[in-house]
Length: 77
Image (cartoon, one colour):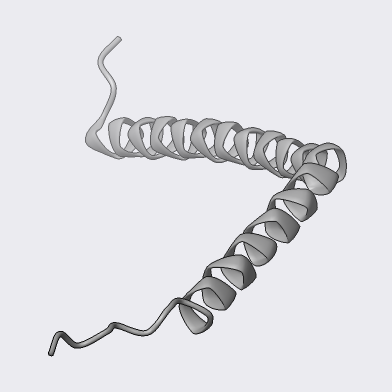
């Protein structure tokens, strides 16, 4: 049995729609997985990020105070 051009086009369109649906479902699954990993990272690693920010701010403060209190350059006679 030979398919007419119309049925070939219909079947091709259905295959394309099915493949697009599969790709969309895969992308949706991956995005949900990424969102859950992001939430997990934010909830479990948030204290480490905050302590790193505190350490950086204290380091920058120390560097600024060292710049402000560095001895003045003495010009030779």
